[in-house]
Amino acid sequence: MTLTELTKLYGRTWTIAEGIGGGWYAVRRADMSAYGLEHGLSNIRCGATLAELARRLDTETRLEKQPWRRVPLRVAP
Image (cartoon, rainbow, N blue to C red):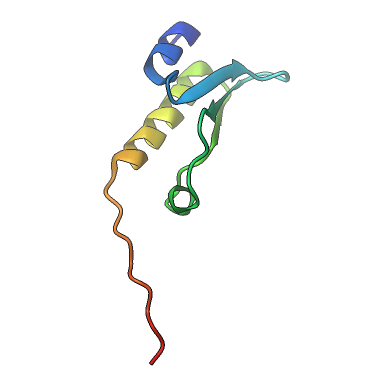
């Protein structure tokens, strides 16, 4: 996986860059909602290699596509 390939796949949603101390990171271009964060999504993903980062972004994309069901609030009697 190259940076160009990763950017082509995820660049519309994520800004991808090399970490100063090594590795790679991706930051969402638009923050995830609190509701999305509660369902395991995040605004930042990291990887030691581009391949690892690609796997994590793929997982994030699959989580985003899952249907979430909102649980109605219970009203105290």
